[in-house]
Amino acid sequence: MKTIILLFLITSITACNMQNKSNAQINNTKEMKSIENIEKIELKEQTRGTNRIFTIKNGQLENSTNGNIIFQELPENKWMKISKLAEKIDTENISKLIAPSSHRYSDAALASTLIIHKNGKEYQSSDFDSGNPPAELKDLYTEIQRIIETKKSK
Image (cartoon, rainbow, N blue to C red; front, side):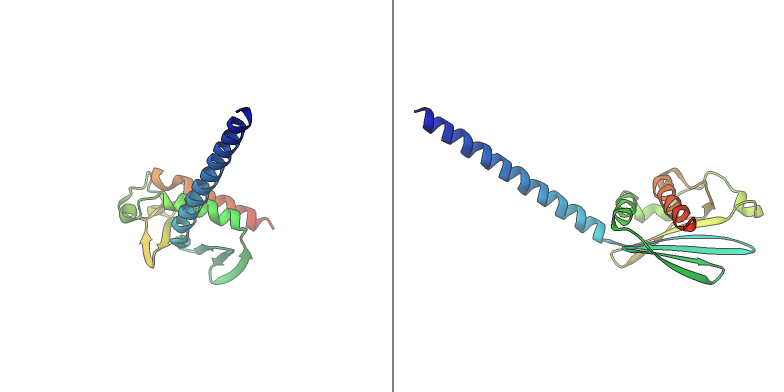
């Protein structure tokens, strides 16, 4: 009798573990498909004398400053983080976000724009001062800045 109970417990635990692994795989697949929707992200910053465009794709960072283009490798984990942050943004309303400051109007700050390419469509934010994005874009913008600064220092 003890043997039967023991076998039943072992079978039950094994079945639960297999179900948990299956659920984890399903969640990972959903996450990957969601991230696959993001094709690339661009950060454009410009003022009278400067025009910078940072394009981030899976595996690559393209830095164009006044027409000089530099390609750099981007680790997959950084792309995954950027993609997850971009997925959280309401892209349909990104152009309606209001910038918290307006120094770009007098050339006291670079005018910045975030562009998210998702599912074959392009979603562009309204202009905002470099370093001071709308609250809804702050996490994504901050992570992009981290990547750009890291790559500049190399």
